[in-house]
Image 1 (cartoon, one colour):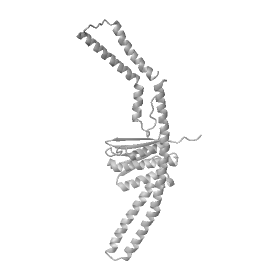
Image 2 (image 1 turned 60 degrees about the horizontal axis):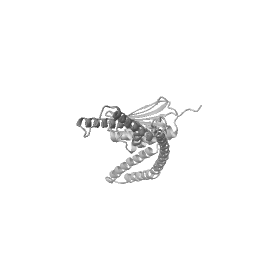
Image 3 (image 1 turned 135 degrees about the vertical axis):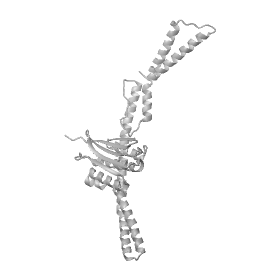
Image 4 (image 1 turned 120 degrees about the vertical axis):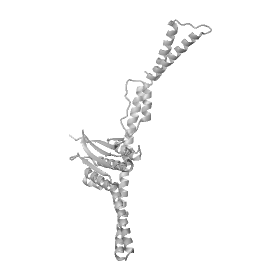
Length: 316
């Protein structure tokens, strides 16, 4: 039944019921109208309006569900659909909206893939320039400072050695940035080694206690999936250090029911997600890129970031 005929039928039902009551009810209207008759008429009108409103709410319930989904849908959380039941204009509208969501999710996944691939390429380019240009220049400065300090007299030699130490620390920071921008260990040694290096460097740099639980014999994952797992762990650790005020972080990577699950859990005050900021949405986009599920739970005892990646099906 179309929306027009559905509303027409509901109103016709209410008006027909009111007409039947007027025809068969032992109620008459005097001229002028007495108080009791006026009360009965007003009460009847109120009952008719309430019944009409209730029937209209029932008839328009699918439209209300569609409106609610339209205001709350998030393309970074795919799979949100309304059930398609029956035939008619409302059912066709729901089917059309679900098909539109399907197309939008596919287009969002494709555009996110292009953006993230371009972002990784730009990171590699910047890391290469930092390594080749800034790193080599600072290394040359270090050697020059060492020669000058060896030849200079005190107190100038002491000041040069101090400057040399500052330059060496800056060079170490540049190298750390290069490793964050381009995780070569991920390509050379694999995901577990890359996560071990990441957590070790994170613990050294932040002073937080980091525990690792990695399953042995993880199935082979493609390069893009490993990169997403690495970047999500990297962003979750950064959030724990910046926002959660945690003392301890646990990173685990394991098999669970045909999936690879990455968990990053801290014992902070529950502020590790800091709302749906750019970092969280970036993690969701990366998860969407490989068909994974990202769940973030935050409580007073801490924050947990969980990325569930379905294992690739083995070819027969």
